[in-house]
Structure formats: C-alpha cells, structure tokens
Image (cartoon, rainbow, N blue to C red; front, side, top):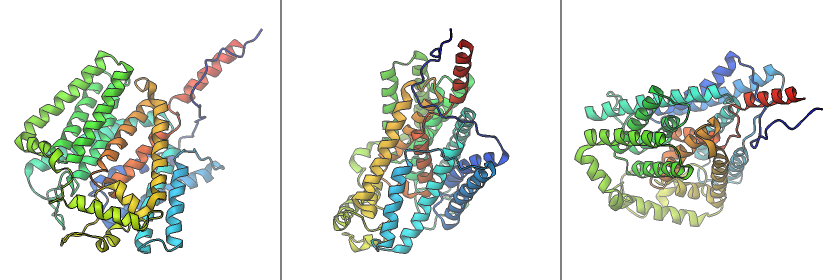
Amino acid sequence: MTSAVLCPPITEPVVALQPSRSPLDQVIFYGAFGLLLFGPLAFGATEPWSIFVLQSGSASLLLLWAFRQVQLGELVIMKSPLFAPMLLFVALVGFQSIAGQTGYRYQTFRVALLYFAYGALILVVVQSLRRTSQVKSLTVLFSAYGFAMAIFALLQSTSSSGKLYWVRTPRSGGWIYGPYVNHNHYAGLMEMLVPIPLVFALSRYARGPRRTMAAIAAAVMASTIFLSGSRGGMVALAIQMAILAGILLRQRKSRRLALVVGAFLAVSVGLLAWLGGGELTKRMASIRTEARAELSGGTRLDITRDGLKMFMRKPLLGWGLGVFPDVYPEFRSFYSDLFVNAAHNDYLQLLVEMGAFGFIAMLWFLVVVYRRAAKKMGKWVHDVNGAAALAATLGITGILVHSFFDFNLQIPANAALFYVLSAIAAMEPRFGLTRRRHSHRQEADAAA
C-alpha cells in the first residue's frame, strides 16, 4: 500500500530555482550591487559623469541579462508584484511627454532615464538574486561597506577639512558628511544600511564573533546618523528601532536577542557620548523646535505652502516628472538668491510633478512592498526569506520617514538602493526552498 500524503504541507509558494552558474551570471549579479555601492562613493551619483555611469551600467547589465537568456535558449522572467505599479508610473510619464503635460519636456526625459536605470536594476536583481549563499554574501558585503563608510565619515568629520575626501571643495557649499555634500543624504544611506548587520546579528545565522562584529558594525553606523547632525535621520532611526523592538516584543524573542540589542545600544550611546559631546545634545534638542525650518527662517515651510499651490493648479497629472526646480520660481512666495532644487519633501514633490495619479502609483507600490514583506517576517529569526524582508523593510521605512523632511529620493545613489531594497522586500520566498522541495520529494518517494 502506498501513501501520497507524507509530504508536509508548504504554506509559501515554492519557486523552482535551479539556475546554471556561469561567469556571466556572476558579472550580472555583482555588477548590479556594485553599482549600488559605487553611487554613494561618487558623491551620491549627483554629477553628470556619475549619473552616466549609473545609467549606462544598469542598461549594460540589462542587455547582458537578455544575452544570457538567449544563451539559455529561453526567456524566463521571474515576476515581481512591483512590476504593475512600475508600469503604471511609466505610462503616466509617457503620457505627460506625449500629451504635452510637462512643463519642460527635456527635463522630464532626463529624469525618466534615471527611473529607467532604477527599473533596470530592480529587474536584474529580481532575476539574479536566487540563492541563500548570495544573500549571505550580500549581508557581509553591505555590512562591511557600511562600517567602512561610517569609519571614513568619522575620520573626515574629526579632521574638519571641509572637503570631500579631504581634496575637493563643493562648488555650492554644503554640510559635508562622508562622501555626501549634504549630511541628510549620508544619514539616508545609513538608515538603509544599518538594519542589514543588525538583523543579521539577531538571526540564528550569526554566532559567536560574527554576531558581535555585526552588532558593533550596526552600532557604529547608527551612531554616525546622530553625529552627522541630521535631525530627520535621528527621527527616522528612532522609528526604525521602535518598530524592530515592537517586533521582538510581539514575537517574544529570547534573552539572547535582548542582549544583542542592549550591546548595540550601549556601543551606539558610548560612541555618541565620546564623539558627539555638547554639540550633539544641542542638535537633538532642536528637533522639535526647528525641524520645519532647517533651511533657515522657516523657508522649508514656505516651500511646502508654495508646493501645495502648484499641486492645486495641476492636481491630476502634475507639472511633469523632474520639473519642480524649473517651475517653482513662478510660485515662490519669498525672496532668495539661492536656487531651490527640491521641495525638501519627497511626497510633496511627487504630488507636484506627477499629480494624484502618480501619488496613487506610489501608494500602490508601497502597499505591495509592505504586504508581501509582512507575509514573510513571521519566522525571520530562522528563515532567510523573512530576515531579508525585515532588513529591507526597516531600511526603506527609514527613508520613507525621512522623506517627510528631506529629499533623499532625489539623490540617485540613495534612490537606487531604496528601490532595490523594496524589490527584495517584495520578493516571493525563494531562498532555501530548492533544498526543502528536494527533501520533501525524497520523503514522498521513500513512502511510495
């Protein structure tokens, strides 16, 4: 007598992942994440040459992936639920250009190329990130990268050189921290990177020295957010940590994890007290009273009022992707000899440029990300899929909070990392499933 029901039920969809390994696959995979690491080092990829590298690099990786499909003799596309809202956004931008709904067609086209680069990176990552070993490699890579970036930022800030990499003076001034002209954008980068070593330290995959090293790396990275002086970054990190604490309490995790969190906080506070001093205390005390006036004299609040007037003039389709700095002077309600290059609120800028329809596409995108990530995070301590989703979701949550006060998503390096983390958070469970499915099949065959 045979039995066909000895195989335990699998609640998550199992994806057959048996990609052949070739040098070209490695080039595509590490090329995509190499671009993400390149952007922050190139001053946030805000200059023409670095934008060109990001755009041409992503397009080249997309072509290499297509060539690889030709080599395999078939077109296999791993789907993502994010593709639908992304296509809606593309359609809206296309309609703006074709129907003459943009205030400056060239600028819309130029920024649309950047979004093409982000989309290409998402597609390449979704297709190439398939194995548990890749997730582990990326965890080590981004943890080491973030730690090295934080150490560099600390050394640069204590030297008081006022120059990027100690050699280059910004053309328009700024508040330098790390490789960024704007300290808020450095904080935005760290908000996305800190959860990676921290979640790893709390998972079962980190033991002994590896757990300690990951916790220390996360603590050093987190402390530089405060030391950078970014008030938006401080608020964002506080909310990230509150969410993580809530998850740990809700799932009633062990004392060991509580000790890791305690060590993380102790190292962070120690670094802050040692390096921050009274200046950091003053900066933190000003969060409540000056958060809306960081530009000086309430200028940010004036920009918000003006931006709302712009939105009301064209509420459905907006003024055109990327045209805010070009159209804004017509609506500016205050005198300034400075060029206002962004709304200092990513949500407001999206409303102005893409209208209500574009805002709906953004909400759709985010709802999909959080719903798909939440389904995987129930057993994140023991499941690679859940751990990756938790780290990615915490990272993008930091940026989304910070976006109420700043414009991190207008910085190509930060935006590219944000969109890739969103794609990872929304992925179907795929890590460690091939081996599980194989073992289930063996059990069923043995029982037959």
